Amino acid sequence: MTTEHPRIPLAGVIGHPIAHSRSPALHGFWLKRYGIKGHYIPMDVAPADLAHVLQTLPKMGFVGVNITIPHKEEILKIADIITDRAALIGAANTLIFRKDGRIHADNTDGAGFIANLRQNAPNWDPTAGPATVFGAGGAARAVIAALIEVGVPEVRLANRTRPRAEAIRSDFGAKVVVSEWVQAANMLDGATTVVNTTSLGMTGKPDFRVPLDGLSPSATVTDIVYTPLMTQFLIEAQEVGCTVVDGLGMLLHQAAPGFERWFGTRPEVDEDTRRAVLGG
Ligand code: ATR
Image (cartoon, rainbow, N blue to C red; front, side, top):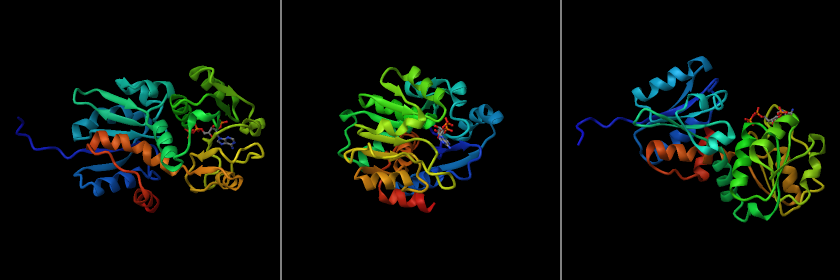
């Protein structure tokens, strides 16, 4: 039996910059909703200070943190325990500070991506046909790892910078088939899952444009961009008759496992959660 006073659990998100992050609004909403005495704090930490800050945080009552740009890859060099999926993706977004002092690093982006599709496209069947993925950055690696895990038979991949797509093929195996970026439209024929993982379509950037003639109305189409919620790409896919799912749910669902581990309650992702984050 301990006579110590229970510590108020602290968590947060570390990035550089961090002011734009929606994670504090999201976790703050859940803490309030579930009546948990805890706090979730945005922390702007320069790359040179990251390792030192991570050593200090547990001493202040932090039970873990989210890690975002530009630290998601670098954190793998600092963490003590790295999950297989974080190692395969080459990046982590969720840390747990263990009682034995070791830092546990996981990547929940892929699970968030799948949970978003399952929630918002309940009839989506990843095994029904090939998945087409545009873009080969960090987000694409998480999405492709998750798609393969849930049983897609083939991942068709194209990226403006082809070697990044080739690197994914060599890391993830023969299910990944790389195409030329300029021939991206050819990858849509027969695809049942279609994902934009590029940053194109985000407010302030050019739209992601690909001729959708080959796209089947039975495909499920999603975008990891969530500002705006309905990207031009999703609007056009909806006009074809596809089921479309916006990217906000991926952000919400990737946050749930961290919240559960740090604060002990599995948070629900629902309309009120979406509203809290959009307004925050
Ligand atoms: P993230 O971790 O969010 O995926 P990233 O690693 O910077 O971020 O990847 C951004 C993705 O958007 C990449 O696939 C990038 O293509 P490149 O690898 O060729 O850079 C893609 N992207 C960004 N701007 C683009 C543009 N103007 N045209 C085509 N693709 C673009």
